[in-house]
Amino acid sequence: MKDTKIIIAGDLLPMPCNYELFRAGDVKTLFGEKLCTLFGSADYRICNFEGCFTDSDTPIEKIGPSIKAPVDTIKAIKNLGIDYATLGNTHSMDYGKQGYLDTCKTLSENNIGYFGWGDNSKSVKSYAEIDDGGRKIILYNVTEQFENAPREDFPGVNLYDEYRVCRELKELKEQSDFLIVFYHGGIEGTHYNSEKMRTRFHRMADNGADVVISQHTHAIGEEERYKNSYFLYGQGNFCFHFRDDVTPLLAEGLVLELDITDNGFTAKPHRILRTEKGCLYDEQQDLSEFYARSKVHDKLLEEDKTAKAEFEEQFGKDCANWTNMFFWALRGINPADSEKRKELSPKELIEYLKNSYTREQLLGIQMFMRNEEFNEVGNQILSDLLKEKDTKENTQ
Image (cartoon, rainbow, N blue to C red; front, side, top):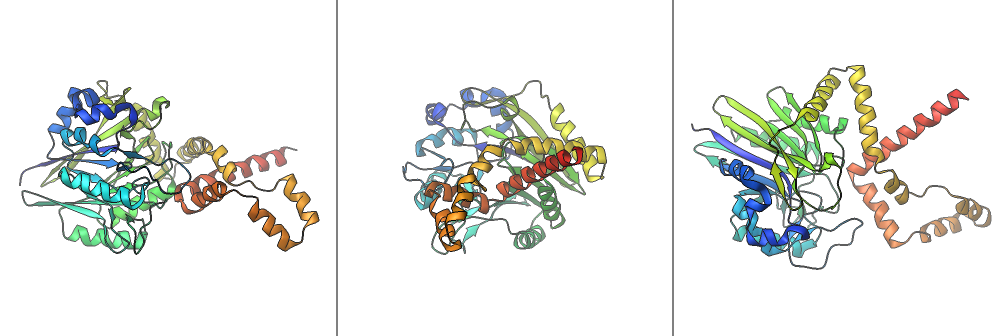
């Protein structure tokens, strides 16, 4: 059987700074000659569309950005040769049912396959099938919950439920030769994956996944080889210029090259660098920090105490970037509330607290409570604060 080469890119969506290049289909300016050649060398090309393709101006009600691209910006994506797109992510439902319908129509008209979402809770399309010369490859997409859950009468994404996902992966592996999982989750801006992520990846591999890739963090994480499987924790962006100002570690990404043969497979990450309007292949291919983090990760699995301390420190620093947002959403006890407790009955105090929040604040708190990413951030921040208090008390 012939070999199969698959190129997998991270987050991709046209933004105002490059709309015209995408409309013109100018892949050479957007991505450079070498990246275009790399994509052209593959049998199949896959990426994550971090948003939807729609001309609607009516986003859903939520706290945080609503992300879309005009329908006519699809031209460069088609010219790059993208064959499949994952749409089980945290922004694909930002423009509700209209955004969903427009995206499905746009991709279908341009012969781009998609998976990871569906018309309602009973018809989510979690995977796509590739039959390459008799070799059957399954692409499976799942995501953490945000404002993207499907309902009986409303579209949405394939949400992570460990029991169901692992059962589906086991069944799909029995029907295929190779199984790739696209997991959309983790904590944005972090370069070290959490213990929960490691556990989930191991369980998915134990149930048949050959490769598991996490997107969503917009940052390069680590890699791991577990049994016969390969994990990429955090792929970083491909071409996603949502913010103008980013740190150097957020201005890089990985394109993963998979070569599948009858005797197994190889996984090769290629480093790309953000440009003003697109991204280019890194001629130096400096992956030293990526491999250094991966070594810490491997030692962590061996219960190395030094590696554990380094991981906790770095993971804590990444999570600390969310501190302001965390305390903005959860106001805690304040002097004004203490005074009201003296004046009001318990029932009146509850009404006072309920009425003291604006609709925007309530939506913000709801977002934190629903989203697994922010749950992990909050727990990390609180753990670090408790450690600080314990240290201060012990030194007094």
